[in-house]
Length: 418
Image (cartoon, rainbow, N blue to C red):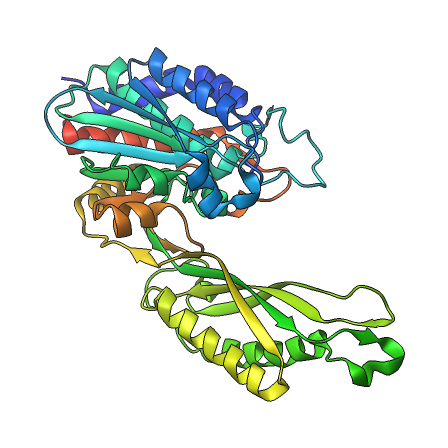
């Protein structure tokens, strides 16, 4: 019977192939927004799945569904990939990860889409967040097969889009269409590094508020109503609200520790036409973070109350427009998939660290919408490398995560001696 060492060796034996695969993957510029080259990314992954014997399905998102969430991006194709591989009639283990990446931005010292290997680190946009997670989950099952481990269930691998802008046309769409209905265990391979088992995330409400005043010439400002001044009134109320929110904390292990509280930030403000025109509108965008015991509806009510107070105080009308929301999500560290991964993480890191993500991710669709409680986040990328310039992932992190994924899968639906 194969041993854990056989599985670990099978992972290590595919190091060069994994680096080559991930390098090719990083060269595909799947930036979101706007959602560039999704078809190319999907085909690359679909071919990789097909070469491994998975039954592959490309799940195109219709334009009307895209328009509902991203009306300014309907000219870009939205396509997800699902691969299924049965080994037996037992439980289904579903690995899922997103292949969209945030825009590369500036200040890189390397080409963000060249894939550069240096001192054991693979550099490129998406290296940590989170193309390496997809590479690790593929490698994990490859290693189990190479080591001759018999599995009694089935494996599903889904690769999705648009997580960086809410996930509604990615994993959210797959959940709505029933692609996770037969899922028994789910591992979302987002970046938290191979020593951590992530149990959930805080929630978020993104919204914008528009103050509507009356335009006037700057030399006769008394004839207008300055929308910037009105917005300043609202921003003052938001600053006071923020102090209240900081008193709402959670005992759950959110990282970093300063993120164990509710929060709100004004992230963008836009107003004005010219230095001599009193502006008739001012728009501000906000990012409201929810701790696990809060709800999006509570946040909405509190914000609308403050909008009403600002209207009463200024005599100016305010409009509220919601951009996206994500309810907080968490599962028990005592669920089977969590305990299994923690045991196997301990073989490399001494003890697994259980954490809650400071930001939202697609895990919420699996837990909140598909009702799959056996769902954790586990992946090789480094959280501190997400969205930064010169993003990288250590190759050893990818291999270690793949080993943990492999032996954990064998424990859940196969046979592997301790």
